Image 1 (cartoon, protein in one colour):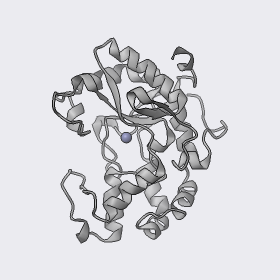
Image 2: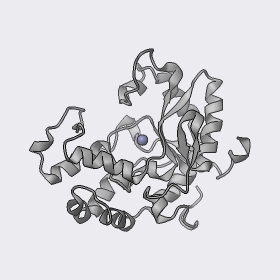
Image 3: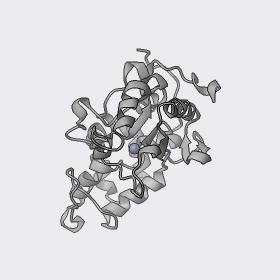
Image 4: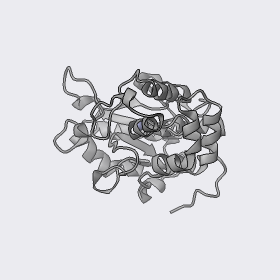
Length: 255
Ligand SMILES: [Zn+2]
């Protein structure tokens, strides 16, 4: 495996934490915003999947800090539904500020720490397999062997690695990390870039982004930044060897 430790920083600190969008480009026709190398690889993979009858679409790609902040503060204030690990609604009013921070992080990233800030990660589904008149829910059941996206899951298992993609939120045996983020079989990451971003995103970088923001629960988050970083940011499945072997720009000339 090539080491990414000695490469220069890929993104500046504002880009890395979603406070700038100078590192991403838009593909308006498919509603997708990514770093150009992740975009190239995705578009080539999308073409390959078409041959298997799949219509790969992106439900969410680049997301900025302010968007993540709105999600966070909405949950913290009880303006958006908050769910426990089993997917049941939580009564926000009954939770302490510490309890709210813990509960939000099961399903939503800390602003500044979302992999969606990097332009390397996105949530994928198969538009051709979405049952008529039903809405995409992004729940594990849709991607399981008896769900509508089972063919997508199998196809990705077999092919995504050679395009540079892996699933950071699906561990061995399909479990998420027991202490951290819940399993997200729809979330793909472009390993050649994302590995460098994850090396760059330290607790100190995150601290600085949170410190200068208007996030609810800021003092709690800052006081516990090392612990939250370990459990909810660093604790992801490693990139596969095959996905890491893809060279940056391999797919650039093909689109
Ligand atoms: Zn995602």
